[in-house]
Length: 290
Image 1 (cartoon, one colour):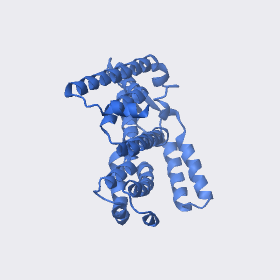
Image 2 (cartoon, rainbow, N blue to C red; image 1 turned 120 degrees about the horizontal axis):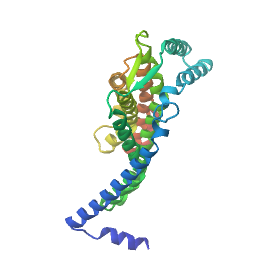
Image 3 (cartoon, rainbow, N blue to C red; image 1 turned 90 degrees about the vertical axis):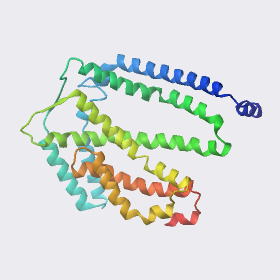
Image 4 (tube, helix red, strand yellow; image 1 turned 45 degrees about the vertical axis):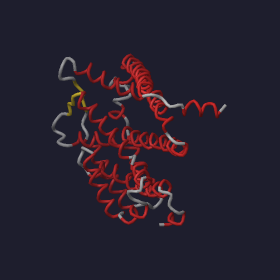
């Protein structure tokens, strides 16, 4: 049975056959995204409502208290006592300065356009399994058996790291950044356009999701032979500087704590990336001790 399937996959197709298959898979993917977008639009109250909507959760979630609790735990077990106490004081001072935030629409169409854009994004997320399956099914026949064996795990690892980065940004970094920004010049009221708020949140989620792909990128670079694990270990000090520079660029709040919330995980992920470069670069096991 398995041999029969293999034979079918190996039958050569003409350019028009490939074009027809691609068109069909694009249509299926577009219909899936459309269905997800329509469903999200009809559920807009649960997604965008200021009092209990998902997208306004960073305005309500008490992540500052969660981080303070985590820092207190680290301090009690002896990890960076002075540093964690300094961060706790910093967070408490910023939290006390935060003002109430009001979202408003500056134009008649702004609320509709924001809801539509956000519904489209949610629609893409909902339909992602179908879209990714269509893309994978189209590319799969062109791959060799060895390529299929390692590309499938790599595909899921890529999704995993993006999900972790996006979740970390949405539930931790964004709720901390918002009161810090609101605390600047407390005498000025915080009235933010709804489009600016959602763009701010989307940028954070996307930036962290992409940044958390660092181990995958390092593994890929090692796989194609451009650099190897030995080079990554040798350039650790330079990597630390580069990571903090990139974090300063990708985090728009311009305060050191929020920048550290991206930089510290990236430094950990850099070490994970070294291990990935060993595995995907087919290095010897003895190099793992470096």
